[in-house]
Amino acid sequence: MGSKLKDVAALAGVSVRTVSNVVNNPSAVAEATRERVLAAIAQTGYRPNLAARYLRQGRTGQIGLVIPEVGSPYFGELAGLLIEKAHARGWTVLIDQTAGQAERERRLLSGAEGHVVDGLIISPWSLAPSEIGRLAGTTPVVVLGEIDPGGTADHLAIDNVAAAREATRHLIGRGARRPAAIGLQPTLCNGTAALRLRGYREALEEAGIRPEPAYEVDVTSLHRPEGHRAMRLLLELPGPPDAVFCFTDELALGALRAAFEAGLRVPGDLSLVGFDDIEDGRYATPGLSTVSPDKDALADRSLQLIADRLYGRLDALPARHVTTPHRLIHRETS
Image 1 (cartoon, rainbow, N blue to C red):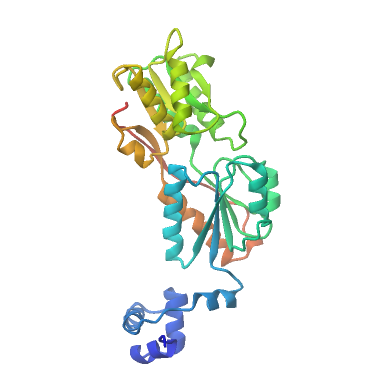
Image 2: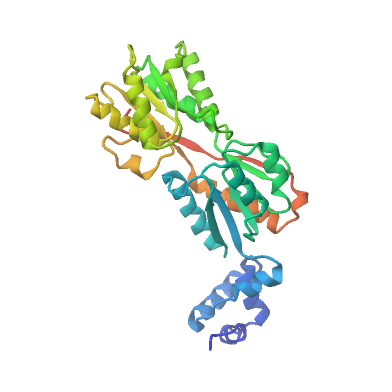
């Protein structure tokens, strides 16, 4: 038979209520007492009944994570961080993917799929902001990305315009006079590509470089094959670019392969910067320069925004807009 609260209390020489406080609200217990209780928990092998605790609180202990692509390295790294940080809070993360389909996003956000969660973190690609705010309802929702949902849904993003401007400035600072951009997505509603394009164009304007429509290449996905295809199109131009800013690292890795196949030296003939700082880019040859969003901060702040609403009053907090940090990492492609 497993150990109980009273067994821990007897060994630690404290009340059952004190043990309960250490398990559920450790900040309410003096440090010396807390350490004594934790030692007793370890010695007895006591495991709190989380299911019973959440039942008493009217909660599930589960947080939903809705992302466009489970196989995306960026979302995979972010999901891993969220799972670890949620575990530390005693929460389990349920993950689903939408492939950027509006109806799938709609069903998951509205709860029509039947998943019962205490809060939801979602990165939407297709829903309009007004619809997200309406569908969020009474469940605490954090929207990742550039869509501002309104209502009581909180919003978390990096400054994509500033990040793209910094990346393009870096390429121009290396001497580029014909920098191109790969990653425009006219069919998506999330606004990310539009903001990165804006930052790219602002950097060109600062440098006195006129934007060339032929140097701004649309993609149908954010993956390596599209980066490869787009780079080949650019290299077929009468005056091909001498630098490329890619809106994701996967696009940049595809572009890097196309440059290699064309016999170009990177960065000698062509400089390249990506976006996301995924692991593949860190170990590519040459190493990929990139914009690195603070994924740790994204995960931390997402969970804290949900916790604020779970342990407070949902309607007492207006929608919050949080901008998390990023940094430009210089590696061998630039």
